Amino acid sequence: MRLFHTSDWHLGRMLYGKSLLEDQRYFLEETFLPAAQRERPACVLLAGDIYDRQVAPPEAIRLFDQALSRLVGLGIPVCVISGNHDGAQRMALLKGALRQSGVYFATELEDALSPVCIEGGGQQAQVFLLPYFDCAQARAFLGDDSLRGEAACMEKLLGRLTPLFQPGACHVLVSHCFCAGAQASDSESGLFVGGSGQVPPALFAAFDYVALGHLHGPQAAGGNARYSGSPLRYSIDEAGQEKGFLALSWDGARMTAEHREARPLRDVRKLSGPFARLLAQGEASPCQDYVEISLTDQAPVLLAAERLRPFYPNLLAVRSQWALEGAAGRRAAQLRGADEAAVFSAFLRDVCGIEPEAEDLALFQEIWKEVQP
Image (cartoon, rainbow, N blue to C red; front, side, top):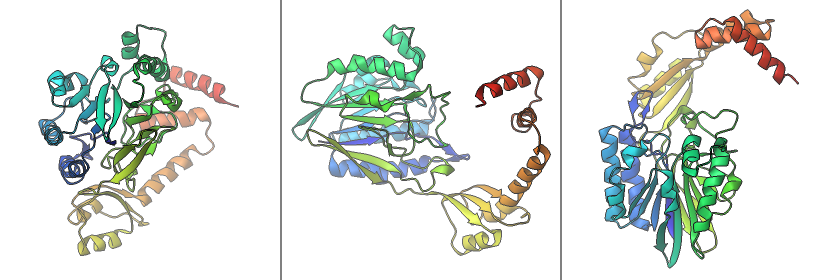
């Protein structure tokens, strides 16, 4: 049995104010949908964050509708969960009717209790669709106000699913969460305080495969859980990171995953060097990629971005190492020999834009003492 695992399309996303819809359409029409047509997987698993924001722009909704229509036309079932960026209630519209076409949306926790049965290659899979949730939603659904942290909530939720396992079937979980030990990127927006938002991968041991969404780098998350990653690079720190989707194969005993590369319409790149060389390179061969340029000149360069942009039309940012080093050096000189409270006060002024108050400093001193060895 063959399955496709993808996630974090973030349709409608902007990169430094530039719309990526054309790039996202290119991924779907030139990579993902042609692969589905060639290989006819038994199911497509879409592990959340279909859209980039809860109220998605009409163009993004149309693009998703077109992709679903193509898959339905090919007779390929699609299992979709809502992620933390999606508007779950909006996505829930018509989900009952769509099931009749082989499109299964999970937007609330109760949906996980009705696994989707998929058949292919003489084999059967039970797909449990667990949408993104916060602890308050899990406590309300489970009727247990004592649960604290995503790990405890996830463990109890999974305890409701495993008794539903059908003997002899492949048991697949689709989830949108942060697995402990996994590597995050700058383009993920979730905040996790003290690790409370992380889920130990050992909790997934009962499943034959766990199709994860949320983190944008393709990676194993421990045991039988994997992130497909986002199909495109959504931040500068993802430059050079592999992007695409996962083609899964179940042989009746083990699930294997093969990463399929997606060649982007425009790449995301970092360029570094002196201004004159980068300008000459652009004049000789204009670059259409999304680029961040770091200038290594040891002197200021006037109007660098304006002079480079004709040859780098998708220029995202220009940084001057000379300016950064100068600013950092001045700050370091000002703070050299200062105590911890002075450094903290400077941070509040320079980064947060606020003047430290006595209670802020008292709280800092209290915490500072606690963390000292």
